[in-house]
Image (cartoon, rainbow, N blue to C red; front, side, top):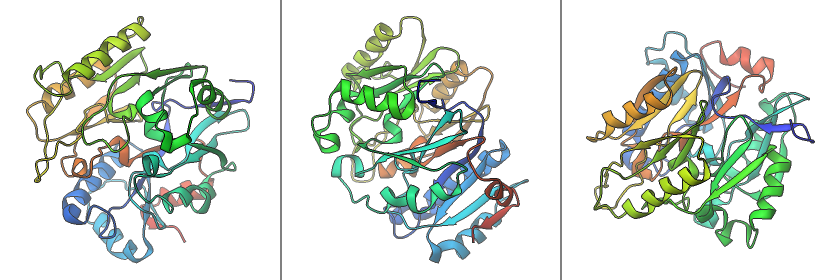
Length: 356
């Protein structure tokens, strides 16, 4: 524990729920709504099968149809609590609260979300924690006035926090905040003992300016899973992602490196999509890995299984999800065990219900 008794949980800590936001016709998912919902349904089913509950944000007018959709799934023991809420979009990784371990119990933490450097309207998303999600927690939400997204932060059990220069130092987020400013803030809010900002790595089509969760992920066994491009020597990403791997080897000489192959995915307009196998979700001894119906899918799953030998690796079809320039980890936020109020847990465990 740090002096202020807070420490951000690593993703492999035991979880009681994962937060999602339902895609509907009011979101950017409209052109792929059915396909996106099928991906969400697959993920919800697999999470429930792993014993992880789901807190599902859903617009009030969508609740009856959405609930009926979910009830048609063949989930053996459904644990889905629908939470009526209004939001801009479904990337909960970047606006839902983070959770720290504390001597006073689990502490929900939020930063300011401004649409990845004022690229998109995020006014509704930025109010979700204070208006809706914070009320579900045992302890009061604590807020920072610094702009930061959950997808930009990766931590291990030693409190070593990872992020990227391209994201943090975008002046549209926090002006001229430098490394020392960020280090102080993340130590105070998240209990980060060490802080490494990587200089390389950004995928074409990535609106986030290079979130760490598309590039480099910790494992519980002192490993690093890295989105490499070793299989695509002529690819536009090859030089930078190769430099990223070398940088990680230099910064983490004691870690075992697992390199993921790079898929090549375009949308119908010919735009390169930021498809990354590093954008996986860890939950209760499972790793939910995005796949894109690409030749590299099988090899990526094998690499992730090697990196997480005691975990069950589950493939989730994210070809529809990446059409909106994000993937599996981006649409999720985990909630460690001991965070939610007892009455919230009890209702979530009753099947597919809606919070009154």
